[in-house]
Image 1: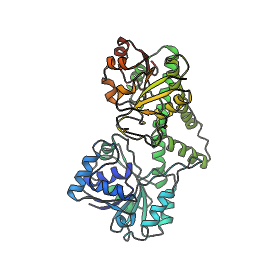
Image 2: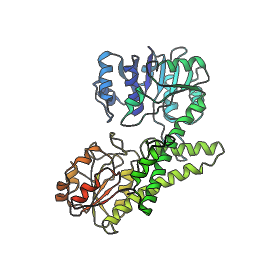
Image 3: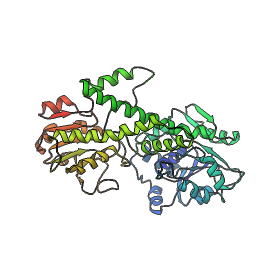
Image 4: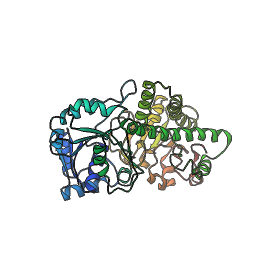
Length: 426
């Protein structure tokens, strides 16, 4: 078992540290926020992620997981250091490596002889060379080990992954990193750094393409009178296509797909290729936000001015509290621009948060969000919304219109309750 330093306790870093500790390694996670380190050391988890609190508690109890302030402290006695810091999008779409470089600069002088540094953050092609240069340590090898974690199922994805990718030009360093996953039942792909770094962008861009494609098919279904749910069912049985990521909705978002898609465009351009297909995928997604807002506007007669819209769901998807690039918020911005008043509820939002427009009225529960509303819009697929009492919603609302942006609700039940139901591609 190895001594592991994890630099950064964000979504990727915290999951990585807790899961490696669960696998039996000795893990020290570092961050620059003193209050965050204090909370984590007490087992308090700052994000919504199923099962993560249990693994952190287990790691603290066994002594295999600890949290410290400052990267240098964590890296001073490690065999392998994982860089799990943000790589925000630059103005030209490229990934900003300043956090990666700062972390490498801090740990470089204190790393033990022949330690290994791993890029776990999503980074552009060539980043291993950048980290090697900043470290200034010929004895320290840099490995790419991209994460393929889905928010809401990150623990499961780490412990039971589809594959583990290790990119390094040095065979010994690659074996050290691959051996960390010896108790994980998954194929291990050992390749060069450039291929490993490209895999993450390619995977996310392909999944975004599937989502944009099915939203486009949903628009066609509406035009010809087909039901996209049945179309998806028929497509999904084709083993070449599969069921996953063929669920229509208000668009895709989150911390990865928008950023990584635009980063891949920049990578492609730098490599001399005009990635028109991916440009189209992004354009279709941007159009989808407007299409859903137009459905809501049409439900109240074509003008949102002075209308009250009840919104169920604010996060970019269910089972997470992540609001970054949320399709729900993109739709809401368009509703507000049209003159609507928005009353919203999300199970993970208990007050104002970055990204939520200040004019949105946040409500304590789903029913209060419906008070005197002219139309109800479902924008995040929280399972609990399925089982709410239609009669109570009817009593609260002024209008009788439902726009289900996730095809989540039982449309027949809502129609029996006196509502006009509008879905996506149905």
